[in-house]
Length: 150
Image (cartoon, rainbow, N blue to C red; front, top):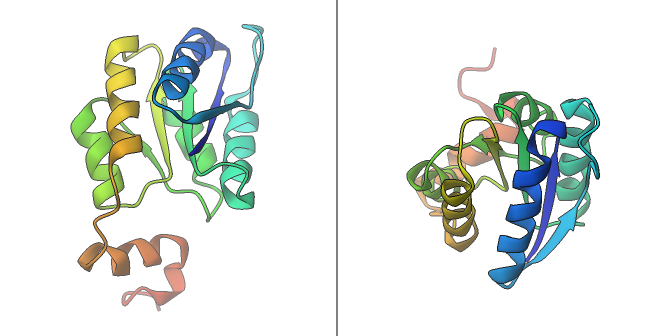
């Protein structure tokens, strides 16, 4: 798979470590930046990652910032992206099984590199469960099909 990685300045080192890990797992990392630790705005890189998913340039993505929260919000602005903020392997697995997440977000100030690598390994190895979850996932990008829409 082609795995896009994007971060802000707070997560440069973690992004580099995870790009190497993605490569070690047999996937192709696509580094969307930034390249230095100079201050940047995480939404710019979250939008860039979401566009890589939407356009098919990448199959899945890894979004990183200090907390993981801001960049996950930015990624989720694109209806083609389903980004889940994860902090341990169980949430990474469930994000795929139940939510068909195509991007995970993590906070470089909150998670260590070993735990982040475990999350990535599980995220990339887990398939979507389908069945009852498919109807729910369809509603994530299409709120107009919700039974509660008025």
